[in-house]
Amino acid sequence: MITPPHPELDLAVSRIIKAPRSTVWQAWTDPSRFEQWWVPAPEVCRVREMDLRPGGSFRTEISQDGIVFGPHITGCFLAVDELERIVFTDALIAGWRPSEASFVSAVITMKEHPDGTEYTATAMHRNVADRDRHEQLGFHDGWGTVTRQLAELVESRAQTS
Image (cartoon, rainbow, N blue to C red; front, side, top):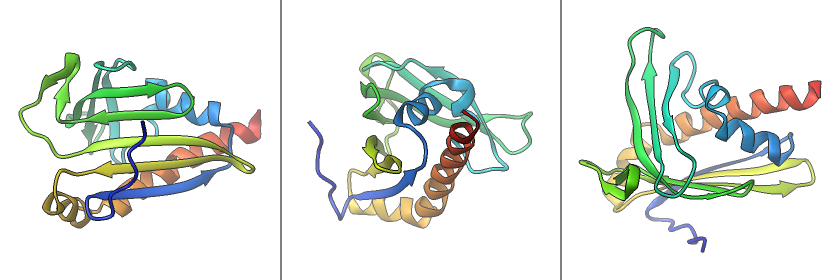
């Protein structure tokens, strides 16, 4: 079941990516490819755990210099529907265990489009204050940037295939 967006609680970015959905999916599910686009450059991402199944761990770290890494996402996958949808949250950690702090749940959807893949990333928040805080922290710039980086990565692969 896909929950419709809640305009007061959700933030989203969408883009038509000129690459096959399978290529976009692979960039999301292959940790070495994922690390190439998941955080805004010049920051660097490291995948510590990516157990792509409901209840599986999702843990990334971020670095400004590529040497010293700190926590970025520590969460749990809620749904993994191949080539269609990935849902994760920081409200839970692996095995459905509650996390110490919660800020966001995210729904990533990939749909066929005549020009490639319709990609949408939606960040869902528990209240308006969290949504507003995420927006003030630069949601649209940050998530927009990583979506652009994802598109650049997979579109370049699609052109060389």
